[in-house]
Image (tube, rainbow, N blue to C red):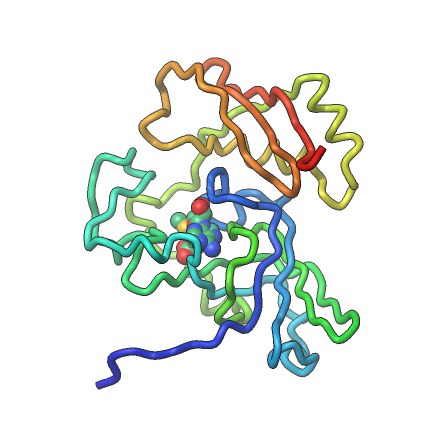
Length: 238
Ligand code: SAM
């Protein structure tokens, strides 16, 4: 019986998410998040992606490299259950699992071949910058989309989106940001998900939070239970 297997990393993700906090819990929730998969040697050959542009979406199989050192436990508290109830690790999409492998469906926006580098432009990702990629496969609707599937404790898409407003300063920085970063919409979509831990939800919270997207440090707070205010956006190294 095979006991262990080595895999080679075929590429890395370039993502606006520079830290784990505030990355959405699944792909497709923040459609404005745009990134790239860059294939690395010896896999950066144009033949590797021939005809991939025929597919609108891809399965990306990757390593939870940032948390893999922390190991795993057989029982997990999924945020969707408020962080109180435990379920088996194999009944979750937790990052802490026996093999730290993740899978996400992302939208394929473009296939770029520049200076012998192969890049797949993707959006809707839930991946940290520099995430190592093990494999990429086309999403095949007839097999992968199952109308009658049951979603267990995660049956419903998270619906309680927060409204997000920006201070005048923060709006100004968004207006000056490069258009491809789509910063205003990206921040709005990320914060509308309310990235705070489950135990903070529906309780008074006066904390000022920070997130990093691209090279921006963004501070924000919760104003009432259903509203997020973006206070300040600062470019790093300024
Ligand atoms: N869609 C994937 C899956 O089901 O396997 C990921 C689900 S997991 C719950 C999503 C979280 O993984 C994100 O919110 C982010 O915090 C975390 N994450 C993303 N990339 C990571 C990485 N390279 N290392 C560790 N954690 C990562």
